[in-house]
Amino acid sequence: DAGVIQSPRHEVTEMGQEVTLRCKPISGHDYLFWYRQTMMRGLELLIYFNNNVPIDDSGMPEDRFSAKMPNASFSTLKIQPSEPRDSAVYFCASSLTAGGYSTDTQYFGPGTRLTVL
Amino acid sequence: KNEVEQSPQNLTAQEGEFITINCSYSVGISALHWLQQHPGGGIVSLFMLSSGKKKHGRLIATINIQEKHSSLHITASHPRDSAVYICAVKVDTDKLIFGTGTRLQVFP
Image (cartoon, rainbow over all chains, first blue to last red; front, side, top):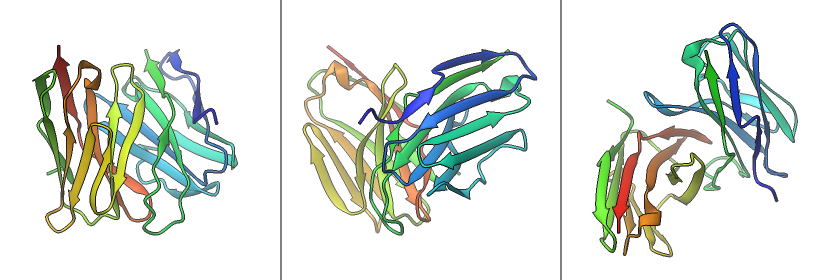
């Protein structure tokens, strides 16, 4: 398997523009996670899905952020409008979990480095 | 106070030294991850454990659920072990809370 695939790898945009980040999880994985990493705050969970359904979006910073998972093999994280403080590395991860107290590991994608000018 | 605390924040070592990185947490967990992030930025899961000890090559991870503490040990450290090591705890069903990481540099 190719692992978790993210695109683009780098994105530079201007404040106010819409940004869409994409993720393809590992085939067969039923959980998908979006994380953000900054120097100040480290890694933070933004939202995660189980079987394409959003389970917990309490980490989404504000209404400018939205995430969708239209099918088992694709998810998007959208920022509209973008702001300089959104500059960060955004990671997608997926896992195969039986639920409850499963100890299945999460597999991370390479990340998208977003710079908002 | 952070729910997941790591120590030390920064660590330098000479090649061959035995290294220990500590993680303490204050919440109930179902499992604990140790992750490695190389300078290029990619994140790799090293271990996921809920009790006892796991070993993979020169890496050993232990967890004490009663004391809410985990350690990551690296035996015979090598410059290629230089990375940021991140502890993350799994709460609820699958939500992860991350420590701030330990930056390790191993010099030849």
